[in-house]
Amino acid sequence: MASPSPLSFFYLLLFSSLSAIAHSNPITLPLNSFPHLSSPDPLQALTFLASSSQTRAHQIKTPKSNSVFKSPLSPHSYGAYSTPLSFGTPQQTLHLIFDTGSSLVWFPCTSRYLCSECSFPKIDPTGIPRFVPKLSSSSKLVGCQNPKCSWIFGPDVKSQCRSCNPKTENCTQTCPAYVVQYGSGSTAGLLLSETLDFPDKKIPNFVVGCSFLSIHQPSGIAGFGRGSESLPSQMGLKKFAYCLASRKFDDSPHSGQLILDSTGVKSSGLTYTPFRQNPSVSNNAYKEYYYLNIRKIIVGNQAVKVPYKFLVPGPDGNGGSIIDSGSTFTFMDKPVLEVVAREFEKQLANWTRATDVETLTGLRPCFDISKEKSVKFPELIFQFKGGAKWALPLNNYFALVSSSGVACLTVVTHQMEDGGGGGGGPSVILGAFQQQNFYVEYDLVNQRLGFRQQTCS
Image 1: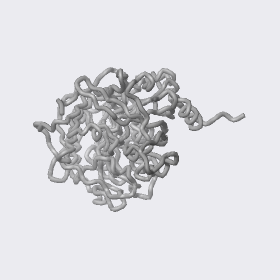
Image 2 (image 1 turned 90 degrees about the vertical axis):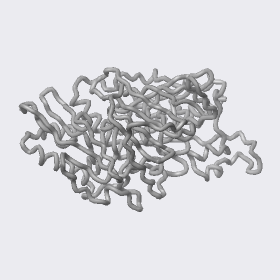
Image 3 (image 1 turned 30 degrees about the vertical axis):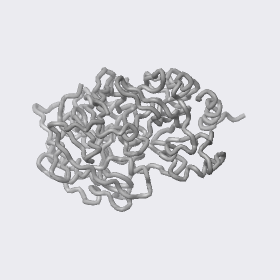
Image 4 (image 1 turned 60 degrees about the vertical axis):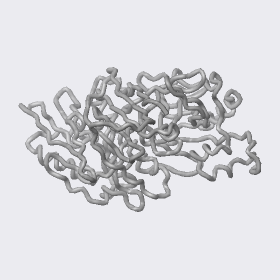
């Protein structure tokens, strides 16, 4: 007899669980780098993060989008940052991955929660913290005719409410089950209406995903994208900001800050650049991203020649740049990284290339600096429309990856050849590693991104 698939098992859990589910100051939360890098070998850790960054970029560039399956993006938590959020009455606190590249907020849910293929270092699939709706007096399922159901499934969702009388709002049918798919796994569950609880503020009727089954995704996600279901949208935030602590290739505890601001008080000392209007394309996933206006990429004192089509989204949504907290390393389409890497290689031509490490990690260029008496790398600067410049500290774009003294540029690209093109979606994805030790503000009222360098701890 064949064993049931994980998705089939999800539906068994789903139906067995249904009976059990019946203006302020800014809020500051800790942001912790997710502690799943248990390897003491920085080369092994860097290779893993590079691979997960490539998978993440693939999903951002080619997301699925339709009325039945919502497709936010996996944060690949093994290189991302988590924050504690409390839901329910009384409150239950879980650490969720902070992700600006998707919008749905969801957590592992019910005592029957199953995580398949989740045997990662320091993760016991049977001991994953989960939210238990029956222990909360404020938990209730989102109904099929609830307008918030359409946040996930679109305006046509009412056609799926077959048990509902269209002439009445008294319908007990629940919003359909969601299935979130991402680069290397998935999660599935039902939408809950719950209370999101902070020390000095409660947000009632907050829509959150109650996942019964996940595959290769041990942690829930706090979606901070542009969708109506995102945390900033549901809270009515005027802006949010974060400061990502330096990531080390080990399990040493370190954390930054996440600030939720509904006051709109002006920040000081920030350099601002406007968000770019999202492409008007049929794929709704592109509408969740925060697009930027990168105009130049500068290596040392030299602006590399990036073709214009990669800097600005076309009518098909391909090209342009976004900022994403869920990507570990910055991604560039192959033609973009090619000119950037070539300029580094040109300016550092006297150094020995570590081609064996390049082959192993997929990163380029890598240099053996073990015999260099003094080491000085060219600057890496992103210049935005209007002149704002984001100059990265050396630790944000080169990493020492072995005890033998090899340093690699921490930017990834496609693994596969694509005929010289960039594929679909954004051409540049500014990742979390490059944002370390910067205060980064998303001004949602004035539609702009602000940043300043500072120590995040």
